[in-house]
Length: 81
Image (cartoon, helix red, strand yellow):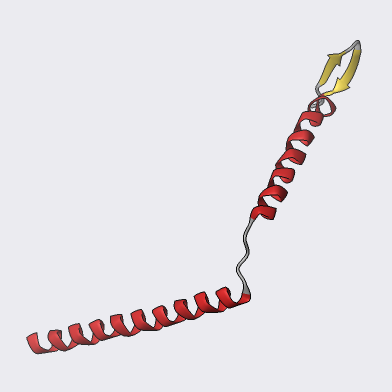
């Protein structure tokens, strides 16, 4: 179904009539995205390595902690039964 709108004594297809505003909004959105991306403070290589090591150490610690709890509860369950 084609929709035509009378604009300035001319009939214009509706998509042509409304497209101008949408394109301006889309362009403005991407300009804003570009400005915000330029404000981003990226980590240095040293910071990235430091934070990665901290994450791995915490991962190993909590894995061992919960494994220890699991073994403890399995042992206590074995004593009850």
